[in-house]
Image (tube, rainbow, N blue to C red):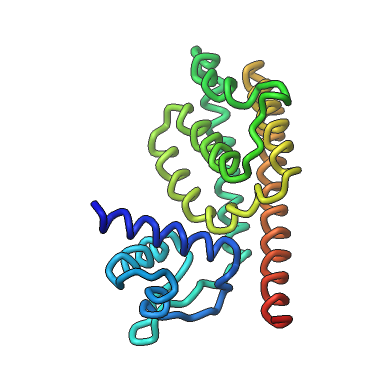
Length: 225
């Protein structure tokens, strides 16, 4: 149990360092360096690094250590396009569901709320936003579509994680999710899909802008230091 806890702690600390660009794309490091940095043995460190490798943050280089992966925005833009197609297909299925209101009730309870009831913690809203889109696809009833969408969600999480570091994105998420749900409940699937496509496109562009800005600031900070 203690070993599992150490590995989880190492993962959390390393992921936070990657999210904050304390390690930037192209950086290399060894397990020994991370072990010394976190004050842990190499075993939990290795488990944490392998988990981050699976999530696409880093790659292992035999005999050379670990490398922070570059961010290929062309690939991520294509993934966002696929995400848009899947979610719009889910909207079509939902629009024909006789129990539509029942399927959407849990999402409406979270997102169709008064401004005073909205959450403002960036990490929490980020997780809720990701869960909203996954739940929307899952509610369509097509479990294979939901599985593919889940895999895609994991792949874009690397860049999507920064979107809610800007407070204005939190308010936009609440407003846009509520509007998507309301038009869908009216079974206006054409309008719902148009809103959803715009929502995903804006999210994609904001993620790219924020990531590039944060990465540039991190690199300039290193030069100044």
